[in-house]
Length: 125
Image (cartoon, rainbow, N blue to C red; front, side, top):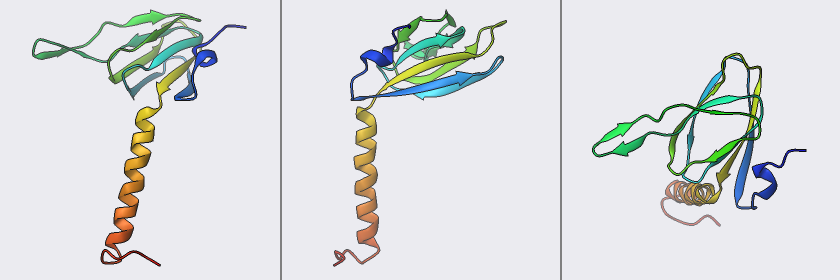
């Protein structure tokens, strides 16, 4: 059995399995440090744009086959396409979970603020 990035993932990471049908493309936002590994099929991957001087430059597509992967240095929009002439492609996306914890704390604080605002600033008993 193939060793995957999910096998070495810590509890502080979120592993998302994805499946793309032939001819399908997917654009999704990723954070710096996100890992990607193809578990079946072949993909064309365009990593997020990078700044060069004062202009954003699109990166060329990279082809990844089964078992290959990459780690993204920059956050942004990731483009995934099934390689031409290939069947279904499957991959694992390993995302650092720390920003999710930050988002959860912010949403909890917002919910608390909204509940207090609804009572005129008084705490509910």
